[in-house]
Amino acid sequence: MGTPRAGRTGRRGAELTVATVPTRLAARQIAALRGKPRASFLLAVDDIRRRGCAAAGVRLTGVGLSAVCRLDLYGAWRLLTVFEAADRCVLLLVAEHTRSENPYRLIYAALGISEPGEPRTKPACCDPEGQPPVDPDLASRLEEGLAELAPPLAAPGKARGRRR
Amino acid sequence: MSVASEYEQAERVVADVALLRDMAAGRLDSERVREAAGILLEHKRSEMPGVSVAVAARLLGVSRTTVEAWRSSGVLSPAAQSRRRHEVTIDSLVRVHALVDELRRLGRIRELRDYIWWSGQDAADYADGKLAQALAELRAGELAEEYAPSEEDLRWARRELAGPAGGEQS
Image (cartoon, rainbow over all chains, first blue to last red; front, side, top):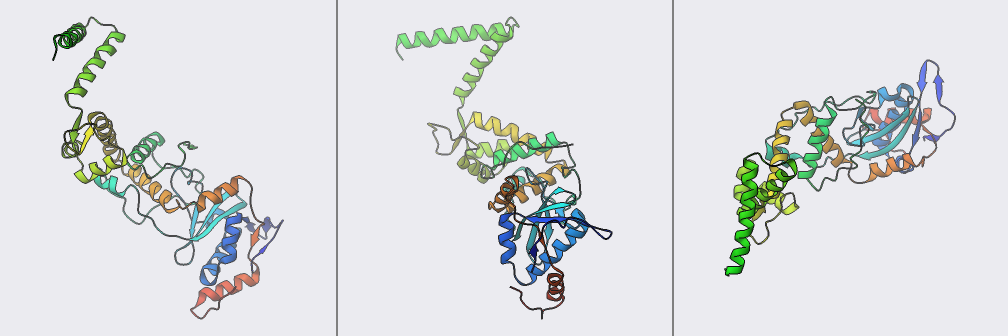
């Protein structure tokens, strides 16, 4: 059984030991994990503690999400994390992923804009920027314009800390 | 139309035409040009306050279904006092036309359209409020104690994932 520990952050032999700290929500989710999802979670956390962001998967995309990393666990289970520092990782969520209908699908189709192909390429969690590889002003204009045509998709906060 | 109302209308038209003639002759300063443009705009609006869904769809280069959806959601404004049931205002059509043109242009940039697509996908996938709650807890410093799997946890996890015979751990 995983146990809360304090003061373990630091070097363990030649390996980095990253503090893995759950939010209260994640702590409840972790306590409810069973079977293979739990097993894959335990190994993932151990890997993150040893290798840091290199073991934390990929970054999400978009407003307010680009600092969040997503790691695939067993089946449809995902672990979402944020690194406050190279040696401190906050476990945000451990949950089953259900893919929603893309809110831009109909608009892309209506405007004749082609959807991206699979597989999806995302910046690695370790990418220090996590920003789109495009002009941020263009991205903002396109995103805000699409959000206007798709009112149900409330843009969660227009302010974004682009760093490019 | 009574003589009085015809007089009032004619008086307004004469004044408007005089202003527009001066504008056409280049005799107006910027303030007066704006005033004249306002008159033209008002005239154009009254000439055709709205267009049908079919015409709007053709002008925008999208399907009627899309125009109906945009009309229902308020992106395009229903024309008031329209002769036909399904009309949208010229003003809203002009605004959306400009927007759609720009989106089509930007949509030709592959990296940009892909980024926005995945941004929308991630926002939708995590729209149930759980991620927002977790981020709020993080910002408020509401964190649990550090979590570290024990060696016993890890041995069990490797066994569990090694084969179908792995047991449950509560």
